[in-house]
Length: 146
Image (cartoon, rainbow, N blue to C red; front, side, top):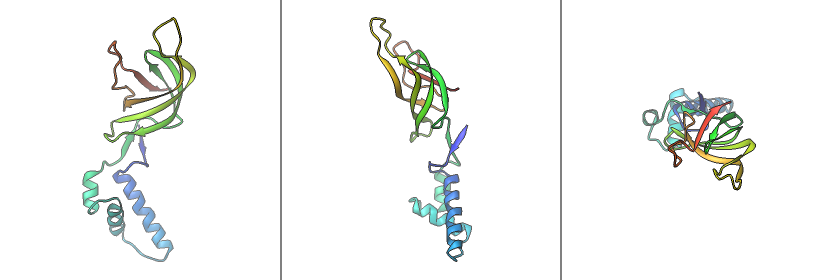
């Protein structure tokens, strides 16, 4: 599993504090590590570093990343493709993913006509399984790393 540096976490705030200290040092100002942590925490709306530390996760896990090759099923149809968008949702357990299929997928069960999709957006959990279910009880999407 990878970790995001774009989502607020203890790790991202620590990285910001380090960058703050380095830029201050380049300008001839000395800031202690603790003072940098306090400034960064306040800049993110927390009362102080201890409050930020208590409220944020250590690191924000992300199961999937943009550019990653994936395989799986969408509406029970097998596919291979590439992730072109990933957004971690507020609960930190689900992501909205945008997938560009290598070959268009027929998303209709009716053999009388075809409804082909080349790109889809779906919500999946950290295991790549959609919480939305089809009428047959199976998930709308099952996503795996290729």
